[in-house]
Image (cartoon, rainbow, N blue to C red):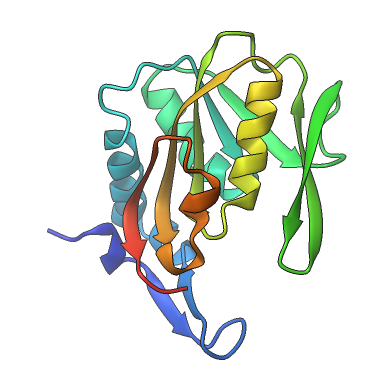
Length: 174
């Protein structure tokens, strides 16, 4: 039986020398790989009591939507600044070379709701840390954060150490 990592194409020296790029598109373009990825991520939520699933743009949408659908939970979008039409809350965070800002609708999380955050990959953890802060700003409680893949060498878990974090596949390098 195949594992998720069997569907991941690793591209050496992209986007720069010394980096091994783990391509999630190779997983989702294969029907069995996509199904396996969704199933394995959903298993990470066995026994987790939560009210709402939050996904980060854009690959968090790909994985979060089918899981939310399967578990009959609402799905909340976290998007880049300026993409949501109603009143939003926003959070800025640092990137390797600059900064970024993400938003969610102000009415998307109710005080006291238990929230799971989902994305495809944890690298440095900045995006998901900002998403978690948005959830908390709206009064929600982040009860779990799940990823398909983790690049442990980038130490993203350090930024998320106060949360319950799980990934399906963990690569030791960057």
